[in-house]
Image (cartoon, rainbow, N blue to C red):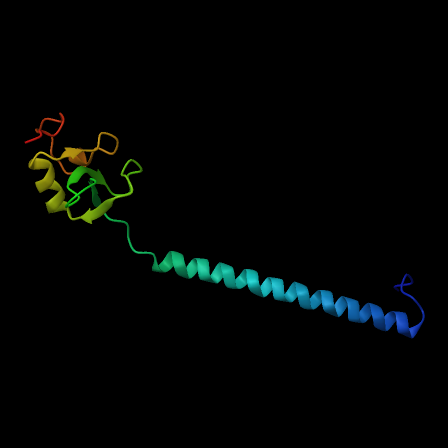
Length: 121
């Protein structure tokens, strides 16, 4: 059947030990990969829902709001906080500039406000 194996017992036992070591390594690697995949899946299931609206915050004292964004807009900077639909509508109606990329004003059904720069007091 397997004529390519050695005929003497010491070499056959050596091969068995060598293959057992490799099988142990392979099984350990399979277990590690399965654990990583299970952890990644648990992370995906536990990830919180993304915010529906965000307000980008400025720099400085009080971190004033700068711009409103829809959901996961890539144009939002690193400083932002989630806001609800009513607060987003209130901020836009109050003169805060909506993002020109994601157009949260359109999604919020605000179509009659000017989209110029925010007036500076």
